[in-house]
Image (tube, rainbow, N blue to C red; front, side):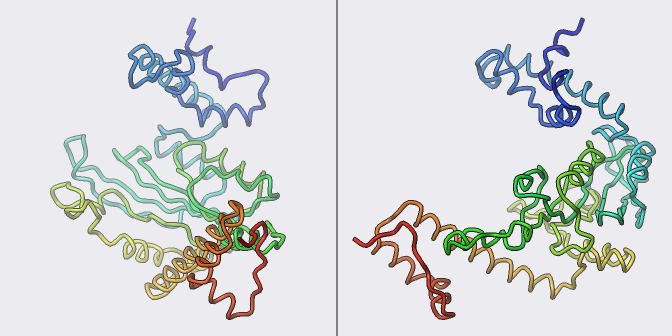
Length: 333
């Protein structure tokens, strides 16, 4: 009998299937081992061994569970993966072959970079292959609106809330009630594991935006794009990439159907620079909002507060525009 398998906490008859999957995807074998022994796996060999065994058992069980559900796992061959995403509703819109001469197979392998599109939800999926028949890595990108404020933290993907959420501290500062329906999430998920489950969760707790408002950080680059002829990474002395991923992104976005380009807000280089500048200004403003809110919550001294307020460019701009700032919880000294 496999006692390690029985001990793993994400399997329970008391849990819904949804919760079992969530727990399996977030399970940390080494944290689990530390809970058992009360010691750090970095300092205690027994804890490290338990964590390692739990990790092996968990990985096997998780992969079996996802395959039974007809979902993807970290070990996908190309045929299986294309069937899974095809059943979801993805359609292939771009295929770029490339040769990998740095393969561990001691031969040049013929790989492919793919772009798929799920029109119903406006999800852009990109991935490449390794060893000719294995899915190497990739992501799916989307814009999404939560059904309710309590669901706003449901996405566990990379990304951030956009729209009025940038100004939530400012609205709180002014005492303005916020409309959370104006928030939307621009983000991405690792496309290899549980792609079907993640998309179903996003559908359950919100809705996808057919027309993107914000383009997440896109990566339409395969791994050979990032290497030189000897297989070394194209980076400078400061370990910064020397290849132009933005130019590669623009080139490959331009190869997509016009309807997809429009849906994902394809931009020219000039438009990208302009949006980056606007984004920086918005981030600066968001930072100001946070600091003002912090001042109010901490009830700092009135004179110290006003000194910061008067010397801040956003404060001066608001006063110039006619805003009357009501300071809650701050009293004169």
